[in-house]
Length: 383
Ligand SMILES: C[S@@+](CC[C@H](N)C(=O)[O-])C[C@H]1O[C@@H](n2cnc3c(N)ncnc32)[C@H](O)[C@@H]1O
Ligand code: SF4
Image (tube, rainbow, N blue to C red):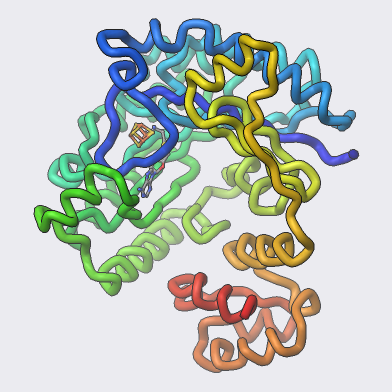
C-alpha cells in the first residue's frame, strides 16, 4: 500500500458530560465511583502505544504520517508529556512527514498557558477549542461548564505559545437561542485570534439528557427555518471576515484548512487508536471495543482491541464518496455519475441549488441554497 496513513487517537474521558453529547466518553465517577481522571486514565497511554505497534505490524505503508488528531472526550485532560510519548512511538514506527499536522481538541476550561506551551513543545501544532457559544444562557442549556471569557484567554495563549492553526467549534440551534444570540456568538468567534471555524447544527441525540428534556417539554428545539437562517448568517459573516467554506460545516482562512478532516472526506486511510475508535484501510472498515475497560482488558491480555470489521461493497464505497464529496466546494465530477442520476438533478440546477457555471465545466457543486439541502440532493443522486 502506498497511501500515507493518518491516525485518530481517542481520549475517552471528560470531567463532566455535557447534556447534548453522546460521544464515547466517560466521567471518572462513571468508570470507578470516587476516582479522579488521573486514576482512571492511569496506564492508558501505554495501551495506545501498544495499539500503535499493532497498527505498524498490520499496515504495510512506507509513507510517513501526514496527519494525527487527538479527539475525545477531552484530550487536554492528559499530561502533554504522555501525549508526547504516543507521538514519539508513532514517529519511530512510521516516520512523520516534515509538514505533519497534529491536532488536539481542547475544552477551554482544561488548559493553562503553561499546558498549551507543553502541548506545543511535544509537537502538537493545531488546536481546536470547543467554544460552542458566547451566550451564557445558551451555554447553560448546552450544559457546558466553561465561562465565555476562558475562550478568549485560551485562544490568545495558544497563538502566543506558537500554535500555527487555532480553531473554534460552534454549535447553533440550541433551545432558546435567538438569531441575535447566534450573531453574538459569531461576532465573538470572529474577534478571536483563530484561523478556522467549525459550526454544527445541534443534533438531539437519543439517550442524552437534552433528549429527555425535549421529550418532557422542558425545552423546545428551534424551527428548521431559523436554523437555516443561522447557517446563512454564519456563512456570510465568516466569508466577509476572510474565512472560506471548504466543507459544509467548516470555514478556514487561506492555508488554515484541517488536513486531517480533508483526508477523511477524500476517503484516505486512517487508523483510530483507543476504545470505540474506527479505522479505514483500503475500503475495509474496522472498529475497537467501545468501553475503556474492555479495551484495557483486551490489550493487557495481548489481544487485538478490534471488535468487528466490514468490507465495503463497491456500491457502498460509491455512496460514501458521493456523500462526502458533495460537501466540498469542488463537489462531484459529472462524469462519475450515471445519466439517470444527472437527469434527476436538473430541477436543482434550474432551482439554483446547483451551480450552473460549475455544471458547464463538468462539476456538480452546491450553491449556498443547495448547501442547505445537501442531504436531499445526495438522496436524489443515490436513488
Ligand atoms: C469531542 S468534542 C470537542 C472537545 C471537547 N470535548 C469539547 O467539547 O470542547 C467535539 C465537538 O463535537 C460537537 N458535538 C458534540 N455533540 C454534538 C451534538 N449533539 N450536536 C452537534 N455537535 C456536537 C461539539 O461542537 C464539540 O465541540
Ligand atoms: S466536553 Fe466534549 S466530549 Fe465531553 S461531554 Fe462535553 S461535548 Fe462531549
